Image (cartoon, rainbow, N blue to C red; front, side, top):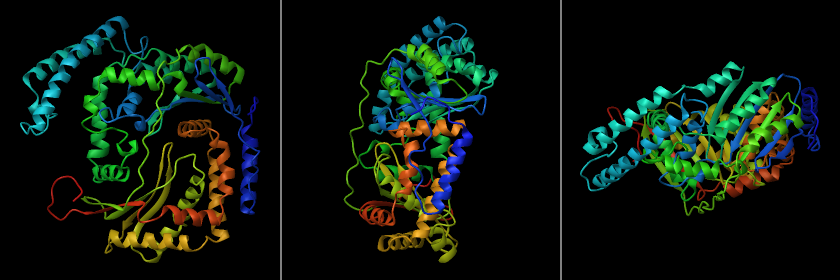
Amino acid sequence: MFKISFPTILVRRWLALTLLLAGAGLSPLAAQQLPVIEKTLSNGMRLLLVPRHDDPSIAGGWVAHVGSANERPGITGIAHLFEHMMFKGSQVIGTKDCAQDVKIIEEQEKIREEMRAEESKLRAASRRGEIDDWQKPENKSPRWRELEKRFNELAAKQRALMVKNEFWKIYDANGASGMNAFTSEDMTVYFCSVPANKLELWMWLESDRLLNNVRREFYTERDVVFEERRMRTDSPPLGLLNEAFNSLFWQSHPYSWPVVGWPSDIPAISKAQADEFYATYYAPQNLTACLVGDFNPDQAFALAEKYLGRIPRGTNTVPDVVTQEMKQPGEKRLNGEADANPQVRIAWHAVAFAHKDAYALDIFAQLLSEQTGRLYKGLVLGSGVATEVGAWNGAQKWAGSFEIRGEAAAGHTPAEVEQGIYAELEKLQQAEVPAAELQKVKNQFAAAEFRKLESNMGIMTHLLVSDGNGDWREFNNSAAKYQAVTAADVRRVAQEYFTKQNRAVATFTRKPDGASGKGVAK
């Protein structure tokens, strides 16, 4: 780690040299790395700093080390819900009268507690077969409807006090761009880019929404998330089938439920549950902030201590994810029909982000993928059984998977595509990949190392994602590890992980003419 800026032009010259060395079959120089200054604030929050002075802007973001894997049945989707809630304002942003706003929220919670009691009765009635679906409006009880009316009256009063999207407006008025966030199984990341002279504003806004988060319009936003699920999972032809396959693949691991949450859990999450979740996972010792751009690191650290450091350290211990995936006793299969082109999806259990085999599996995926890869050459250009085919290695924080998907060409079936995939895998299991083919793929990874350093936002995002997966240092270490993969390594992982017992297969075919309803497994 260094305490000086590392000009972009030098980074690019180093990477150009890296590409030349890779093309010559040599390993890149492991000692030449992007300098990252790591600091820890007084409250336990970590800070990554990368000064770059060729652009008068700063990419700023932070990662909460929490995703859907940290949830439990009953509150699935709560991590993603928080991504939405973090943009709803604070005690000073988003409201004209905070005291009145808080009072309304308290009154809303009393009504919601009664509504939850009614919903429990409705779920019991559904189990007895008295109603088909307790969430349908026509099945709601008269008492629930009365409570909803009172709740909506309070919501109207709250809306009159709100300053909509004030958080966004402040950033926009001060020249910020690219503000967004995302949630995965392992992390929740928030980021934007600000002019270099607005760093203190970024520090204040980000610390304010962490320190003084109000969770305004909690239940309204919960409904927004439920609608997002309908659009992204329920509506697409393969949405529910892919979700079902994911749960089939992960038998015991918390990756088995979707990031957006189960449809029965989302409308059942209470604000009290959200408050407890926030206190545990959004405590500063479970967060890492990152700045990349035009700033003085000592001044940036002082600002971070002044603003981010004022957030009290959390008192709850962040629990580890202890449930591991059980070893599969045999192949799993799902057959479904949908209004989509016939295709096959094959997944194998693989390794986590930090595992030594993750790099060989990444190389293996690239050998198979894209129009220069073996799958395209063999199944699209060769036998012609597929129109599209690709592979990728999904090494995540707690566990990993490796997946191949292929779409059948007209006149061919998913079964033909599946067998063609196995034939290509068998070739890599039986013989080592030629040196020239392996080096070509290594060159592609060296080029990717170059591209991830092209912008402040790109560096920041990669650092936060690596940190969310377990270690930001992989940002610097991955290049050498990819170049160190040998043909023997590739053959070994091909033999070890790509077995029938270790895989799950989903076959999707078109619905028969005149079929109705959503695609489901049969």
